[in-house]
Length: 312
Image (cartoon, rainbow, N blue to C red; front, side, top):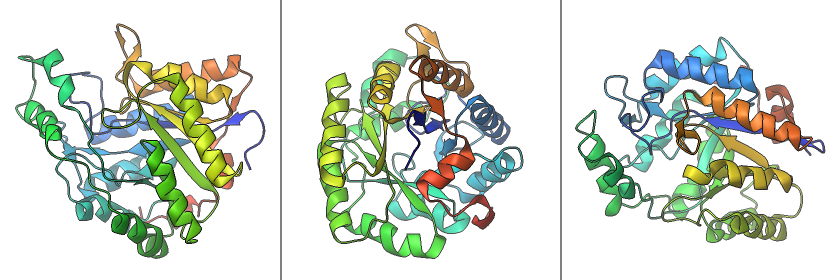
């Protein structure tokens, strides 16, 4: 169990939703990814969540070689827990998205709890005519007709074969209330090993909306289904990021920041780095008399295998 008043801070440094046009300080190259990840860890993030970008033009990539470069570079400079995506980006197959976990055997990986409409197309009008790269607009537009796929069979494979073969544990991402019931189904089949680490993803088009009331709704449902012995946190998408994660922190939850979730530091001010967002939430947590856990403490709380047993 996490000590009272402590918080696991996660930083998601780049993601696959935002494009280079939207914020030129979003990390794209290997050096930028490593530098921003290490700076976020130094600012107080115990967990660094990683997606990959093609260093030539910033498009989302599933290349395990890029992930290996990020992970090796970060590991050489700090002891942050590295959580690798299995969500990838639009257009990537499930097999492509999972290959990085097979190859790198990280301590932690995300597990999306269901197929869904994951809309990014609504951002296009804000940047019309200003695109830096020709892939950006078609990529965002593809989410109008192409759903994100995470089937029951995919989730079961991750919880059994993938977990057994790599020793990784999962950061379960719930985009709506039904996803919690999916996780409860697998928990009832004894395929989910405690402690359960849950992220409530609030504010994505296609998922539960960006309202503070939904933080309460998701938390109450999770406690009803799994009891108090869970590690839950809030991931706030877009402009409501800090409102939502602060609300979650007041309820005793963990928090996630980063340029994957929002490219802003506050209204009208683009974030210049991931560390800026980590600094901000650490200040807020301090005012709430809450203390970020170190990576070593978070490893113990989450029951992770240890950085000495990864394959990078």
